[in-house]
Length: 298
Image: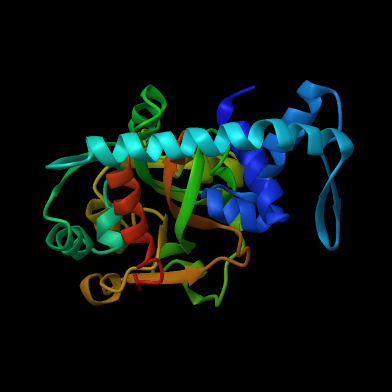
């Protein structure tokens, strides 16, 4: 049993609510429920009972809470003192970031943060999605910023969702699909797909959704350059799955953007990490700053 799981349990007892505890811990409700369930399985007893009014401690849960709550409080107090001592003077925040993320959000956020926190130097390590995963897995102090299917977040790392965006179908104006108000993914079985390169999580969406609809996608071209993909759609070379972009209509007159009938087809931008409490205080300060702008328009 990891110490962070004990911390999660203590926090859940304090809030008496899975949703409020998950928010305070910066993890998903599903991840927190799974953690509590794993603890109960390992201990061989129920720690919490759940009802419409919230959660209550069992007799075993109360014993566990009474023994470990002082230890957790002492650990956090000591950690705060140590971090306060170590964080005097210049600090550096490094994070892995998938390409195009700050094209979706706003690069100005980085400059604004730097102006408000001149003592912190930001280092953005831009790399493909799967290399961001590897970077986060290498060290529990590392964190990254990714855009992947929302239902896949939390499968490997804890995460804080920042912005969720529906996927659209980018198609040439002469394609019959361009005339519809919506499109069902299942009718795309005969289309030529233009795709982001394989080191992105883009292929996860394409492969998973195609499998659910009973076909294998015909990917005719891949590129890390989204502008190149837009140009190919504009020339009628295939279809592309992407998020809404305000510049496409003005730059590419032959492209039509059609919503999907399935509103679960989304990209979710999120911070990913192993353990939020193990990420440095300056890094958490940076994440909280960006999160304050989570409603920024694309």
